[in-house]
Image (cartoon, rainbow, N blue to C red; front, side, top):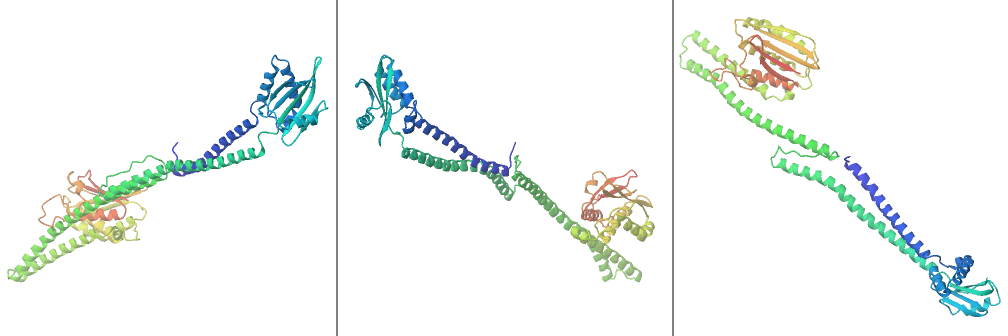
Amino acid sequence: MKMNIKKRLAVSNLLMLLIPVAVVLMAGLVFLVVIFSMLNSNGFRLGEERFYDHKHEIVGMVEECLEVDDPGAALKELINSAGQSDMRIMIAENGEILYDAGTGNASDGELLAVAAGEDSVFVCDEVRQLYKTMLAKGSRTFEIAVFCNYSTLPEQALETALAVMVTGLVVLVVICIILANRLLSRSVFRKIEYPLDELLAGVREVASGNLDYRIEYNENDEFKPAVDEFNKMTEKLKNSVEMLKDEEASRQMLIVGITHDIKSPLTSMIGYVEGLCDGVADTQEKRLRYLKVIRRKCDEINALVTKMIVLTKSEYELSGGNESILPDEEIGKFIAANGEEYRGKGLRILYTGEPVPPLKISSADFARLLVNIADNSLKYKKGAEGRLQIELRRSGGKTTLSFADDGQGVSEEDLPHLFEAFYRADRARTSTESGNGLGLAIVRKIIAAAGGEVSACNNEQGGLTVRAVF
């Protein structure tokens, strides 16, 4: 199971405590075993109290030594097993010493003198202890004297050993903490260093212009969201750069297009103005006709400039800020105000729909959207009278607004470009009478500003259907 950095830090802190404790416990156990072995090695040790408590057992062992073939060697082995280099065992019979094993001391004679005349006695001085007793074995009676110094492991030595043990444990704890800290910190730091290095490398790649760079990171820790956001940011940055390139290309095309579309009516106006100035229009009727043409060309330029203003507006301006409208009411108002005029021009507008939630768009821009689509249908109707069916529906939490006419339709190769500014199926821009290619581009911009998407397709009547989904 993969752990995040928070869990790794918690485990690291716990191990930083448990590892020194475990090592100290093991080392302490070893020290205790060593000290216990020092106190209890090779049989029994004869300290002051223990010598007195075990004196009868010692005499029993001495009696066993007398039963072997070589009692002297058996006595030496007994002394060795007791672990006391200063122990001495004397066996006498009728005042004559039969066996004397071990190491004597200058005070042994004084202790024997004190014990003289006693059958069983325990005497001692500042250094030495003596236990003397009589042992009857068959017809023989032996006098046994066992000498032993006080404990050969004094308290000072024991205190020194304990001090060394405590000091060693403290040093061991410090060493364990330092080593555990270095090892565990390095382990956790590696988990932090790797994603930071990856993020830094990603930033450098993006700064150098490589917007296709993505960070591959499979760990499920705190850095995963940061890496995912970095990849999303890079993707958005790439899309923004591509959009800027597209906008720059559109801007250049816009400049070329508006220059071309304004040039045609201007050229025509200049010709008629020159005709007036040169006296070509020598009658009042001709002059009036020339002025009407000039006025019409001025209207064309004014309409073109108005469309250009709409195209250059921001999405916030087109969405009307905080203004919202009810589309079914606005469509009704539009048909009531303009239906007869369009019918007089040869286009019949019909509407079927239902109430839907408000759209975030200004009423003026929504009316402009309806006008542009109606003008487009009027322009490309096939017969003397065309038909435009407007339909408004709500389904699946989406609002669909569709416009279907029975006009000429659009070729399949032109459909993908239908909403591009200055795009016309007829590539020859010899006149603006057939349109300047801005109407549907404005429709797309207004719908996008309202948070919708627009598409177009040819319908069963052979005409064009424009569908907006909000």
